[in-house]
Image (cartoon, rainbow, N blue to C red):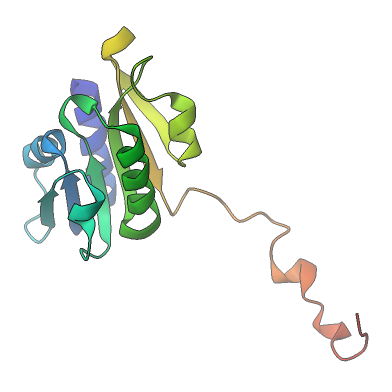
Length: 157
């Protein structure tokens, strides 16, 4: 758990979020152990979609339920909501293994597995998502390749 803790603290150091959501008891403990700047606003919430209703957008959200146990259906909905609507950066600590989450499921949600702690059935993983670095715009997708202003009003297609 020490490695995951230091990795999360590294993320907080790098990004210096002004508004943080800590979802779950383990997330609350991790954020409390880190010394955020005085102006940073931390909200401790239950790990559920209902707890996020009407809360607005966070700079950083940490989802870490007790023991990394996150039910799949509710967890998928919660991760998707945080990723799409309510957090610019997301860190999730979940239980990996045969009876936990699979790495392919996490990748399907857009998360990357950055660190692991433990082996076997007790393994925890730190997964992250950052909207700024999730997908780079490819070179071919820019106006230079598709908007030909010199052809406007000359050809009809």
